[in-house]
Amino acid sequence: MTDLNSRYGMNPPHSEVINACQHVESCNVLDMGCSNGRNALYLSQLGFNVTAVDHNAGAIQNLQSIIAQENITNIDPRIYDINQARLDADYGFIVCTVTLMFLAPDRVEAVLADMRECTLPGGYNLIVCAMDTPAYPCPVRFPFTMKEGQLSTLYQGWEMIKSNEDLGTMHNGAQLQFATMLARKPAQPASV
Image (tube, rainbow, N blue to C red):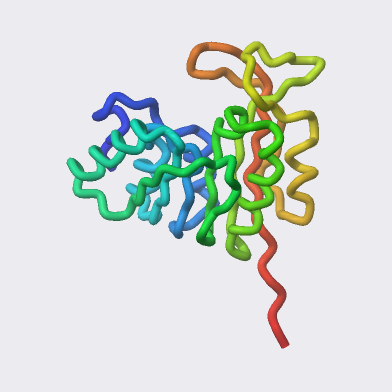
């Protein structure tokens, strides 16, 4: 697999995306808050059909340029305000890594509800979000941070493939606690 990320001066794909791909087979995937496309490029090379959304038009244009240069046919980049919580398709896998903390705090639960609704039965959601806890106050002033247990509560009834609230380090070196979850939506019961 060609390392398109380093070729275009991007960070590597998020480690949790790499780990999740050990559980998730290629399918239609939504990369929410794709930024410059580091996860989208990785997923496309694994055979996923990627819809990559971000509100930043410049980031989407940059990703479109890479897609054109590399003749990539399985990434569909789109400008989209995630705060709207109005996805227009269903996906087998939705990736939302270090995105929620930049959203309007009063929209996050609606965004997560929309993600759950637009996940196909048996599909997966991957979420990584900064936390602000008494033990580890968040050193970065994000608009939104997760509280202890908040993410797993919102995904009750889903199979938890991975769920933790561990310390992590951001690209800038800041250390903080992250809520990390890979969850599988229950398959619909067979109709009689």
